[in-house]
Length: 109
Ligand code: HEC
Image (cartoon, rainbow, N blue to C red):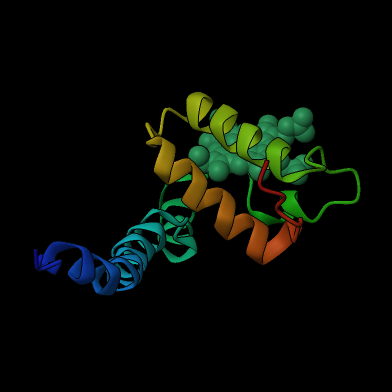
């Protein structure tokens, strides 16, 4: 009896194409989730004045020593300053301050 294996053979062709397609679907989403330092800069410049300027980030005895410290401190100051940043805003501001002043290596854990 002769069988036609159409679904199987088409799967074999489709699988790699699907994988490649998935990569394209995944990468723009990742890019959109990445912290946006430009947005962070706007937030910081517009909303974080009053108590300190950026010199606080380069002072010799600064209190932030790791990227985690930085994110925690931004969160702390956001609460005190009542700026109501979202979690994404906090990461954006941290990204901006890190790129501009702290230059910590980020280790994804
Ligand atoms: C209500 C006053 C106030 C406002 C507004 C404020 N901060 Fe701060 N911030 C402080 C003080 C005070 C310190 C220093 C704390 C210390 O020296 O122990 C500080 C320190 C920091 C540091 C750590 C500096 C270091 O030593 O490395 C970061 C980062 C920071 N602020 C971010 C922000 C961000 C982001 C905003 C806007 C959401 C903001 N701050 C708004 C009071 C404020």
